[in-house]
Amino acid sequence: MRASTIGIVKATAPILAHSAVAITTRFYETLLGEHPELRPMFNRSHIERGLQAHALADAVVAYAQCIDHPEVLAPALRRIAHKHASLDVQPRQYEIVGQCLLRAISDVLGDAAAVEIIDAWGEAYEHLAHVLIEMEQDIYRRNEREPGGWRGPRRFQVTRIEPESASIRSFYLVPADGGPLMPFTAGQYLTVLLEIDGQSVRRNYSISCAPGLGHYRITLKRDPEGLVSRYFHDHVRVGHVLDVLPPCGDFVLHESERPLVLVSAGVGITPTISMLDVAVASGRPIVFLHATHRGREHAFRRHVQALSRIHPQLRHAFVYEQLDPGDAPQHVGMLDRAILSRYIAGPDVEVYVVGPQPFMETVFHHVKALGVPEDRIHYEFFGPQQPLSAPADDEPQRVLSRRLRRPTEEYASLA
Image (cartoon, rainbow, N blue to C red):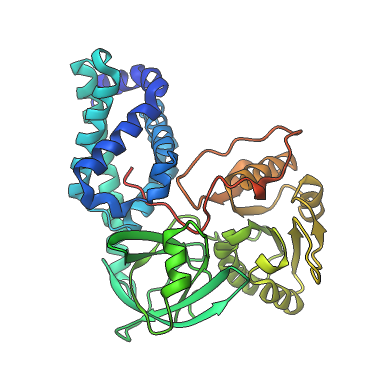
C-alpha cells in the first residue's frame, strides 16, 4: 500500500468516525438490497437493531486509525478471518462488499468525499481484502487437511437430544456419511445452514463438548424471538439431517500452567463447558463460575458438580439472580467484585469470560481491578464484536436483566 494512501486514510479517519454509523447503515441497506443472495450471511435481528452497523463502524474506524500498525490489527483480523471462514465467505464477495462500502462513503459524505479520498479508501480496502482472503484460504486449506476435515457444507445427523435446563437443549451431531470427525479446539464453533420458512440462514454455535468423543454437541437456548433457536427446539428431532460447516474460531483454550478461571452467564456456558472438560485432564487449578437467573435455567449444573467431586483442583460456584424452591447456589444476586475476589487469588491467572455484553464488561472491569493483565482476560461475543468498556463503579450491576444480546443467535458478518 502506498504511503500516500496511508496518509489520506489516517487523515480522513476523524471524518469517517463522525459519520461511521451512517455510512455502515447505508452500506448494509445497499448491500442487502442489491445482493439478496448475501442475506443468509447475516443475522437479520442484528441488522434490524443496528448492531451489525455499529460493529462494522467500529472496525472501519479502527482500521483507519491503525492502518500503519498491522501488528495492532492482527488479532482483530484473525478473528474476522475465522468468522468469515465459518460462513464459507468467497473471494468474489469481497469485490461486491468493497463497491457497496465505497458507494456508502460517497453517499454519506457527499462533497467531502473527494476523488482522491475515495481512491485511497478503495486501495486500502483492496489491501485489507487481500490480507483477509489469504487468511481465510489458509483456514480452508487447514480444515481440509485435518483427518475428517472438509470444506463447504457437510451433512450431519442428529443422534441425540438432551434437555439441559427448562429452556436449553443439547443436540448431538455425527457425520451422516459415517466418515471420521474433524478434531476441534475447545472454544470453537460450528456453522449450521438451514432453510426456515423459505429463508436461508447460517448460524454459529459453540461446540459444547470436549474433542475426541466421536460427535459434536451444540447447545441452544430457546429464544421466543429467535428464528433458529425456535426452529431447533420446535422442529429438529433425532434423525434430522443438517448441513454443517467446519469448526472455526480463535477464542480457544490456550495451553498454560497458570490457574484457569472460566466465567460465564446464561447460555454463554457452552464454550466454557468444553474448555472445562479439556482442562480438568491437565491437572491445572481451575475455577468455574457461572451466573444465571435461577436454577431451572442452569445448564450443565450436575456435570460441573460431578467433575468437582472427581477433580480436587476444580472449584466451582454458581450465582443465581433469583431463587426458586430447591435452588442452592453458592451466591445469590449478581456476580460482583466481592465474589470474584474470593475465587481469583492473584493476578497470575488466565481468565475466559462469555455472556451478554454488560456481564462481560462488568467481569472484565472487576478482574482488571483485581490485578489481572488485559492480555490474560479472554472473551467471546455471541453477536457482533464490540469493545468492552468498563462500567462505572456505582452502576447497578443487574447485567443479566439487560438484554443487549440474544445469546443463542451467533452473528454472521462479511466485514
